[in-house]
Length: 106
Picture 1: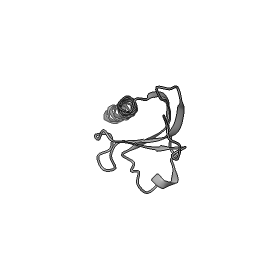
Picture 2: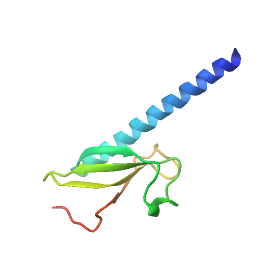
Picture 3: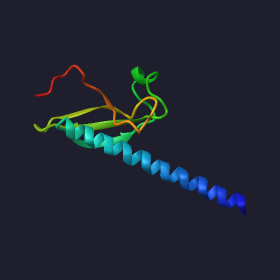
Picture 4: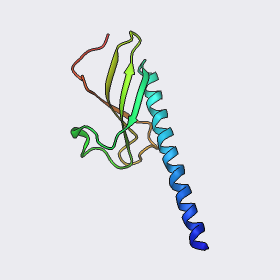
């Protein structure tokens, strides 16, 4: 009986953590988009990310495939990394790697 209670507590903690990580990451992305004058159109969590991030992304961070729209209606896609390397989502940091990094927006 004690084991059943422990299992329920562990499952509850895991579920709460999943919801927290998802909400915190999406809040960071929405805040970042707003500060940059963009509208976040789509954000999908990704297990895989750009090769240049393989050695610089920790398990404490989340990576999303994002699509944004600017004030002129132009769409742009890229990768967003939320949180800090060591402190994870306790940090407000958002790094973005654009698919079209060499294109300048108006």
